[in-house]
Amino acid sequence: MRRLWLVFAQTATVCLAVLFVVSTLRPDLLAWNLRGNVVTIKEPQTETEAKKITSFSDAAKQAMPAVVNIFTTKEVKAPRQPFMDDPVFRYFFGDQPGGQTQKSTNLGSGVIVSDKGYVLTNSHVVEAADAIEVALADGRRAPARVVGSDLETDLAVLKIDLSMLPAITFGQSEQARVGDVVLAIGNPYGFGSTVTLGIVSALGRSNLPIDIPFQSFIQTDAAINPGNSGGALVDINGNLIGINSSIYSSTGSSVGIGFAIPGSVAKQVLEQIVEHGSVTRGWIGVAVQDLTKEFAESFKLPDIGGALISDVLRGGPADKGGVKPGDILTAVSGKPVANSAGMLNLIAALQPGQQATLKVIRERKETELTVTVGRRPKQPRRE
Image 1: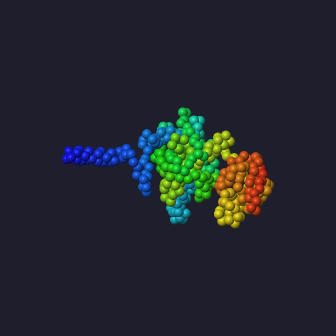
Image 2 (image 1 turned 120 degrees about the vertical axis):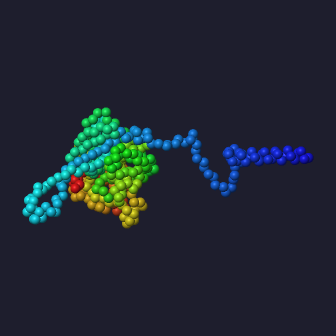
Image 3 (image 1 turned 90 degrees about the horizontal axis):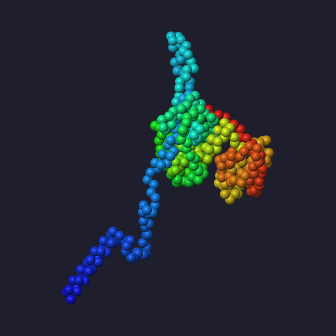
């Protein structure tokens, strides 16, 4: 009997030891599962189950050669010194020559978009410049001339005469999603080609306090600083999805809120400037404002989509087509109008002379009007 007890005790001890080791090292091998009010924790996938992205060097390597540094200079009048008007000073030293000038320099970035030498940048980078020089990532430098500039989107096209140029590939900015990883490449503070990482923070940003009427920005938290203007915003494959344009900051440096012009807009402007030297946009002669919740309630509308026509230019295309102040524009040629900025972009995309169908709500009744699109007047140059 004693022998049997010793065998049982030894066997039980070994089994408990094995169970302890297995439950500690490989609990997944145990045959039972705990049930009841136990929280189930999802284990992370193994490296063989999920592809790990640990570096974006391939995307940077693909895009960086096409991003250039831009240096501009212009002559500005030197401020007149107060003592120049002092009669005592003038008595001893005589009248000094006035109208003296001095050189002002500016830094920016650009993107080579064609091996023929076309470079996209911001119009504010090269505006009023007397001389423009472009520096490539491979060390080459070349003077550049402005082919055309579009103040209404803050885009400009430059031309440089060099061979074997690395042109960037345009991506599908329309397919960008909030949360997508992006890289911003440019020339911050003149440090040269620099890459920063972030995500798409928002899409279709408009009504920013800047003097650009056509706004539909990609917002990103990738660091954008002075000198980055005109640089590239690229996806994880190194394809261009935006031209970095501005930042929101109380200090002038990045606080994680930057804005880029969508690549689709940049491509349209590029093609028109290269072909015609300028950009032609549709126009119907109306003033609009966003249809707020309060306006929607006053008009007894179920939602707040659309744009409110606040004024109609007498004799303009909209006036001739029967559009009236107070109409709510909900669609342009079948495309829905989300807000006033969206309406402006839809109209601008139309070709002057073509017919456009406007769907409007008037006195809570939906109707369709046909207008002949006009040419958007040239806007005055910013001072």
